[in-house]
Length: 530
Image (tube, rainbow, N blue to C red; front, side, top):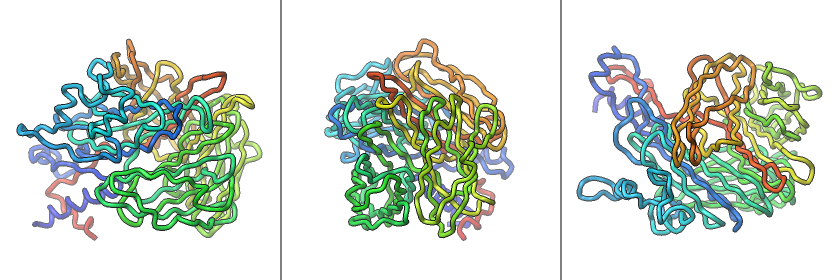
């Protein structure tokens, strides 16, 4: 094997380490000549997503949604399939070389929404039953059109899935659950994520008023071994079973945080480190009085963090932050408002002690305007992770959601399960102005895509009036693409009112990493092997 081929393999291996797993095809030789030695940007051709078990409540109603945007240069074949975690298996090929998943999808026998948006006979609320039969819970039919399926009660499964070919670039999945009553009642949403080997969750709790679960999902054929560290206000908490937790192959494991330690603390940072294998991870934070939602992982520890899209009608905002360093740090706090960066009165700086979790009540921070928190350590010298807990509604009828520090939207990202009313897209450009393009896809049951372009001024947060598909039926996807400037951060809020309680959920939009720079075969990339 020559040096250039080895270098290309090394580059793809590095990509896989970042995205969970991904694969690309070698560039077309003719196209390589046209590029005259420059790296080509090509669609990722294989990727994976993991969705945690939605709820343990018999009153839960869950919608799974899956979508891939149309991507220029993508393959003309492929599949995108989500299965129940315990039933994950590779699709078998028939005599014609077509996978059984593809064949089932063409015949509408996969339990997913069909071409006309109608639920198939075996789909809809029978998602869990289909998974037990080792059939796909959800399978895409074509790029550019989302599909959705519903599941009721506590039997809705965790999902493990892969996409390849034309479905891989930008593949996104979401689960949205409404719980009518009980602990954690409200709207709970989470974007399915790629497997990784390390996660940070500031904002969890072991307090008696909270029931927080750490959900671990293993997509692979071998067991994963995970260490779980908990950090409270005085440092690391003593845990009983936090080391060497085994997650069985192709399975999901929910762990109640309060059973890992005897210490009861309101603000806890959870650190998940995978010793062997890889997992998906998310925290489900449920409260007796203020509902609950999913707490996704914070962006990696950094000296500069952005928490995008705090709802403008937030009644209370509580920031939880943690630095894994031994050194203390004074965080500079700014709010990116519609008019620019401002410093909240009384919260100009926040002091963090090294290795200790700290919580800060910021009150009604946004005061009726769109806003995003911008946190900065002096000279970016001390890395920090952070998340905010947001309350909406009046006393006695409040609902909560979480917004972690987010990664920037470098090229493209998608939010799913949007409806004609109750969807808010919030975009911030804290360091420089940007132009973005937002596309509303066709609906799951009908509708024509629409696209709009927006300019986001430097240092501001804007709740943009996102487009809605013409003639919308069902739900739809919102895809945000950067056109110039940046960096850009974004989040999407879904909201509805039930019994006078403002149910809502917020999901940051990380870049979908659907494109990858593939070096030309004529380049010497031996540096990647060092």
